[in-house]
Image 1 (cartoon, one colour):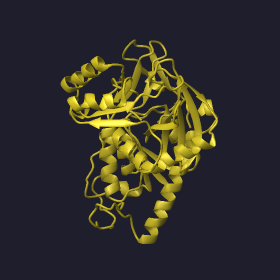
Image 2: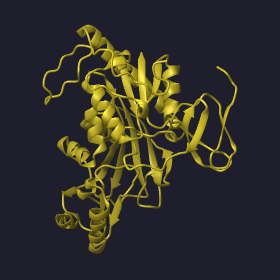
Image 3: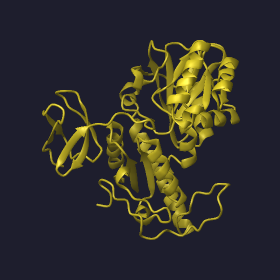
Image 4: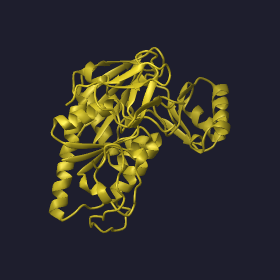
Length: 322
Length: 60
């Protein structure tokens, strides 16, 4: 199998994945997205790959590349719809609500004045989050109306247009930890707890990770959450609510795991690589049976030719097309 | 595979930064002397720059 692994910065995770692909006998080509020119009308030399495995650190670059490649029939991991849903906290919330997966209560407004009302419907304290963002950046716990007014004004004046959406989430009075479950191919394969005395329990903010048992409830909830967003591979963050039990907080489509392999004893990178190869194999078999690569079908798309594209639009990233 | 160590100079403190295999463009490394986070910006010649600050759309 020939896998293109797109990236923008090559971190420990990407190195671990390259090694895992090579150990499994795959032909993996790391491609630095920052040096690529796409032709949206043609796969060009991308057609030599059986699948594209996205590991870009930049969401913008991920969305740009996967939109083009998937539209041209390339199987991308994760699929575009899953990335779009995971990347946007409101979209994730909607997917979880639609599928009955328990998640914290949320209120949404598009202006500051109803934003205060949204916050007060939940009560203090509550949590304000940018709908798009990661690693706990700009996530704020709002303890009273003064803080709410202040944060909303700052966001209105200093933030980008995306920050004008008020996404307020109920504050969960959790123990000093949250839980992350890694789900690959529909199966929960590993779980960690992230402990911190700070209310934010992102490891990017200094929380300490430790492996934990995957209980049947954790497995069930995290697998349902990943199914709700349609991801092949994802990490599900869960909170323990004293009243409602486990709640799915967020789902990450391009997970970090460098510390989780040692703390859980699970070779997450190897399982991820193997699942990617299985997907690529299935897609290649399907394409061979159908006589070519077909654009991914979505209900809103007009019919598109399934003919394999020509030779323009070559990837030219580091290590590409050697 | 060659076991030869590949080296470059830390742009922050001038120390030698070693790679145990050929680095790729965009690879992140840390200087063991000054702890600066570095990025490979060229592989031929091997050149390092300080890794960029986290951007708004970076994440998982």
